[in-house]
Structure formats: structure tokens, C-alpha cells
Length: 327
Figure (cartoon, rainbow, N blue to C red):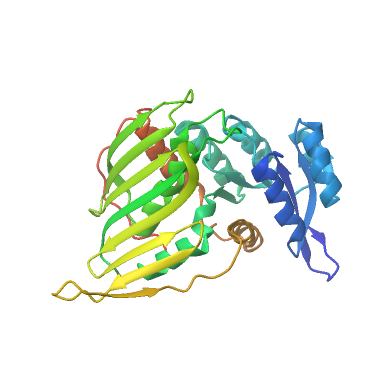
């Protein structure tokens, strides 16, 4: 780490991948106090020039060149099939890593990344940014101490032209698989997936049903066929019914059910914050304090495993006792 103007330690970071997410990572890092954005790397020289001209950071054509510039931490926003070689090269150089979801293109590759990070003693965080959505956090807080019965999540929208290497389950549904695990503090034990490819080479519509080890029923409706974006969460507990719009960030709670069918309703407080900024701040804090990240490699791997099983690419594991709740 270098010294910042206040004499404190400045974390030197880099970003690999100058697509939509990579540009946003670079923008946020450039704004964060105590951070030096050393540079961005991408084989597309025009994209690199676009970022460097606006942020005044270095630009590199390869990961090796970015690493040679001297960085403490790296965020990986490259295509999924490149996550493993990039992560392993960075970790081998002692660099802390935040890898955008999914952690890798296979569970086996994800396991290699986790093992390498543990051996090197570096921080590994997986970019499940939806956990940092203020509406999601409001829902999580409202569920504290509640007996959850069911969760229904809809995440739909038009086909993204940028998408080529993965389908809708890995791109979209993996967010909600992670949320189901986080909300319930329980692993997903039973899976009933239905997927289809209508316009894309990979699946572009999926209806996924789950049961967690704790008995919660969950359903994910996701597709690239809807002409508009929608992101909604509905959670039923024994005492409440909570609905949340993750785009407008409105969260409503129904409670105090009466025998005559009436009930009370209130809007829950939702903080104002950019999820990506909150996520990158959490990554920086984990690196500087050497504490466990909010979404570690094991969480990212577990959600990827469920997603791959939804696609029929993984056998179901033997039932096991679930550990305590994740906070």
C-alpha cells in the first residue's frame, strides 16, 4: 500500500475488463477515499482509452502489465470463462481479488480459486451486488426473527446484447439463489427447474422451484423475454407478508392479520446508497482489516453449484446438516 495525502495507507487497486460493469467498478474506485485506482486492463484499446481519458488512471492491454504496475487488489469484470485464469494469476502475485458473479464457469474452477486464495492468504470476495441493494437489506432486516414460509422472486427483462457466454440462470437467477440462501440462512436442498431457449443459444427463460433444508419454499421467475425490467421479491412468514421492488426500492410489510381478513400495512425505511459503491467499500474494508468478506468464495461457489444443478450440469449432493444462519 502507498501513502495518501493524509498520511494513511492508500490501497492500490486495478480493474480488469472494461465492459459495463468494469467501467462502473473503475468509476467508483476513482471516487473512493483512501483508494488509488492504478489502472484498468482490457485487450480492447478503445475501451481502455475511454476509461483512462475520463478517470486519469493507467491503461493496460493485459493483466500482467496491470500487475506489474503494482496493485494490492483487483476486481475482475471480464467474461466468465476468463475468471479462473485471471484470478489465479492475480492470487499467485499476492493480490486480493473481487470477482464478479459467477465466481467461475464451473464449480471445479471456483474451488480452485478458493483453494489458491486460502493458500496465498489473500482476500477473495464474490460480487453478488444485490446483497448491497438497500431494498434487499431492508427486507433482510424485516425478516429478522421471522419464521419464513415462502419466497417468490421475479427478475426479468429484455435480452442484453452484451451477453454471449452464459444464459439467464447464471446471469440473473444466480443473484436470487444467493438471496434465498441469505434470507433463510439455509442451504437449498431440493431443486425443480424448468428452462427453455426461445431466441438465444442458451436458456433465456427459467422457472426454478426450490425447497431449503429448513423447509422454505422458493420460486424464481427469470427471463430475457420481457420488454421491460422487473425485479420484485415477495416473502411470506407466519406473521408478515413483505413485498419489495428492487428497482424503485419500495418495500412494504403487511402484518397484524385479523379474523375478518383485515390487516395493517406500512412502508419500510430504505436507505439511499449505490449498491456497487457499498459493495466495493465492503471489499476494501475486508482487505484492510483482514476480516472475512461479506460474500466470500464459499457463498459464491454454493450459489453457482445450485445454478449449475438447475441446468443439469451437477449431480445433487447427499443430504447434510445445515450450519447456522448467515447474517
